[in-house]
Length: 207
Image (tube, rainbow, N blue to C red; front, side):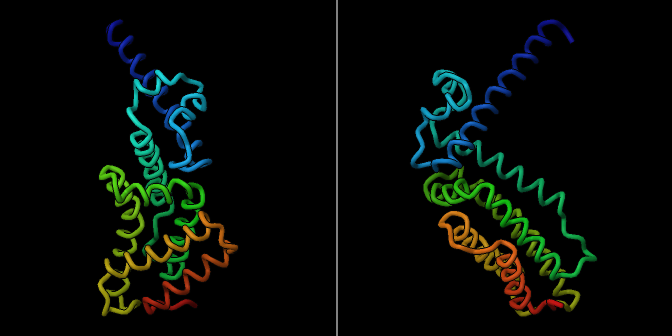
């Protein structure tokens, strides 16, 4: 690698680190104050950078929020990879693990998730990220339901994708009430209740 190439590589790495500092700072600000109540001017100081530096990387609060949600999506995808549902696990255990993973992920990003849902109605780019976040759970659940139907474990008179979307939306709404609006639920009881509702809706044994 030539000297010029090494210099360019170091410059690109530095820019990537600076951009990530801004994204991390925005995530802290949005999680603390929410997208709508926070100010763009709050982000650069949180990152230890100037406002001028911010505009070298982003043009608006909406654009950096999108970058934050890309990070959230990557984390959720990584969690699902680490906790991939084993085909030999009992269906009710798989359902429980899916609910636990979703609630724990939502809890860490509650304000972000709520604001993402609101912004997705107006911003196509954020809507696309929201759809990808939803599919992290819904696609795998639909695949599992289809497999359980083929094995004779789950009821077979419902469409797997429709059922997955309906059940995932129930958990999403529950998590919103729990973590955003502060309903006085207890997490383990919530996971147990949601798991039983899912399993009974699908006709899956719970013992």
